[in-house]
Structures are given as C-alpha cells and as structure tokens.
Figure (cartoon, rainbow, N blue to C red):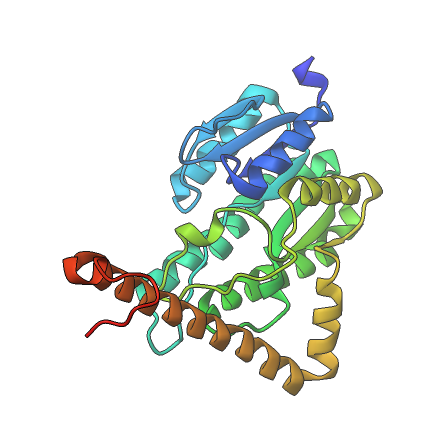
Length: 280
C-alpha cells in the first residue's frame, strides 16, 4: 500500500538525471512524487506540475504531498539550469534566473520539507555538479551557483546530523543528458570524453542512500581531477583553459567549413568542378 511506502519527492523528474533517479527509486518500491513544469513521459507514482522558482508552487508541492500521502521521507533536489558565458558578457538577469533555479529554489523547498523529513528521520539528496567543487571558466555563473549549492548541502548535513537526517551531496560530472541544450549564455561547452550514464549515476545515488553515505562523485575519475586542482592549481588552470580554448577553435573551424560548403553548394559553377580540379 502507498501509505506504507516511503515517499520520495524529486524535482526535475521529467528528463535527464531526474528521470533516471525517479525510475530507480520507483523500481525499488518507493512512492515517487515527480515535480516538473511539463508532464514526464515515464511512469511515476504521482506527478505535480510546478515551477519551483515560484514561492506559491513550492508551498503547494509540500502541502499536496502531505495531504495525499501524509509524509515526506526523501527530498531529491535535482532541477537545475546552466549558463555558459564570461562574467564580462553575462546577462545579469539570466544569472539571477540560474541562481533562482540552482540555489534559492532548492534551499526554500528544503526548508518547507524539513519538519516532515526530521519527523521521518529521512534523507535529503542534493544533486550538484563537479562545477560545485571545481572552478570552471566560461561557465562561471553556473560554477558560482553550484559552489553555493554545494556549501548549502555540506553545512545542512552537519546541522541535521543529530536529528538522524542524512544529507547526500551528489557531485555529477559529464553525464549524457540534454542539459547543455537548455543552458543560457552565448558559449558552447566542450565535448568531453568519458561521459557517464544516467542509469549508472542513479544506481550510485541509490547505493549511497541505502548505505547512508554523505557524498557521491560520478564518474569516479573526477576525483583525480579534483585532487589535481587542489594540489596543482596553476596546472589545473592551464589544462581547463586549454580545453575550452581548443573547443572554441574547433567550433570556429566547423563554422568556417559550413560557410565554405554553403557557398560551394550555392554556386552552379562550383558544383560543376570535377574532383581533383581547381577552379579558375
């Protein structure tokens, strides 16, 4: 029966990491309440259409869950949005929006859920980013928001430990999702190798919940990168800047190639040139 199941609230459950985590907890027998602005194309125990940046919606989420199920055992703060730009060029209104989604909304939703989670001696899972521990140029606004969210998660764990509430900070690295497609800003992030898988991350998060761990880092090789950044900060800065700069160069090369191809294809005389010959 649902009233005997543990109740999980997960934000941003309609796609990406949120969807994978929701499906994992559902498969393990939890009552999963997914929160998103659009209805997810996946099975959930219950769905609440809401915008977590709105105060009224946040209050309605908790009130609705308590009215329907009478408890909150796990809150998974997953919803987030990125921004890729320099500080100089960044739109301050877009930056505010990122902070609203990535920091203020989950903080407020957590505060509203806390009385019920403390009563259940439950768990809060904050899905952050490697950008919360690393300083990443050209995604500076996102990095700042995730640093704040990471600090919130770590200090919250210390404050709630004696209440029997566990707080898990999830440091997610490069994962195959559509996250960058909805990001704000004028820059395009580099395509990094060795991307992690959503289902594997969901498995790691569930294991951390069962074992009452306080941290998940996935993919695991990010631990090496984080360690290196602390021991050799200047070396890290050179590497990360080169990754981005090379990405810009490749993108510029691709754009120029596309322009040349468009000019070539629009000219009948060019199209008539045989392979291996040179235009006059």
